[in-house]
Amino acid sequence: MDSALYRRGERVETNCAPHDYETLRAGVQEPGDFVWLGLYMPSEREFADVAAAFHLHPLAVEDAVKAHQRPKLERYEDSLFLVLKTLWYVDEDDAVETGEINIFLGSDFVVTVRHGRGARLAPARHLLEQQQHALSQGPSSAVYAVADHVVDGYLAVVRELTADVDEVETSVFSPRRTSDSARIYTLKREIAEVRRAVIPLRDPIRRFALGEVPGIDPDIEPFFRDVLDHLNQAAEVVDSLESLLSSAFDAHLAQVTVQQNDDMRKISAWVAIAAVPTAVTGFFGQNLPYPGFGAEGGFIGSSIMIIVGAALLYWLFRARNWL
Figure 1 (tube, rainbow, N blue to C red):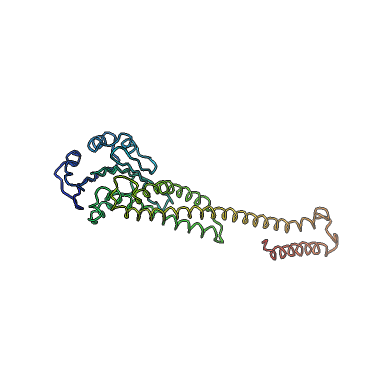
Figure 2: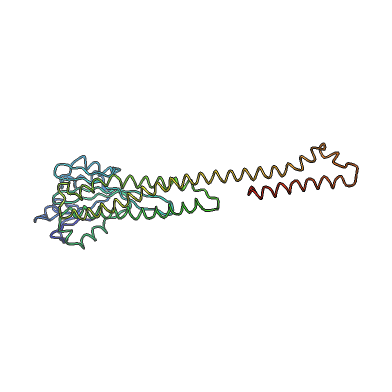
């Protein structure tokens, strides 16, 4: 996708073909010079030339080509291998989509391998090129730029999830009847996806920030501390959102139970009201003879008993909020 040689915090023009990796790396002449090579979903055959030019470890190469790795930091001989998960949010589906970035870090090179549609690295590269002081710290600055860009993406996804969780809470506690269980389950699943990206990355970034990783320039460590702070913020919000959704789901189940009880009370009340004419007419033998049978006021008397009894029950049930 892009390749560049950096010297003293500035991008240097190179006179080589895009896939001439040996010549590109040979342009490193002064201390602090480094190459940043960016690739997008390379095949095993395409990546073989890169691995040969930069002497990458076969196990790390296999992980980078096949992808689907968990966030991790590994050291192979004279290079580091870092895996980050990228996240972006699809609001109409309440879905968190994931990608992956693999970073190879050596003394004079950074190779980034991106999988998935999200988290383009061009903005991170352009932003870093505007920070000459950070860029002059060597290839460690490129790792910082990528990590910072990815973690900013986490914060954006977390903000979207927070808005959706707020909507669910409002819906659950609204007076109208809602069916929120499916959306709650979807959001819990997406939050679990975010956790799988955020939580494992905390240890590698912490090690960068504390200077525990050989090959990371000490001057770049304060930048990693800023990334770690943002990453911890995302992790804390994810934990709180998961707790809120669990509480909202419990409240939703309680609301459903209450609504079902209300429905049963209403049904029972109407059954009791309907039983009044049945009881009156049934007591006198299936409507005949009714009270005062053969007399002019008999039918009127039975009707009054039915109406008064039903009205009395209706008033009683209304007073107790059963209807």
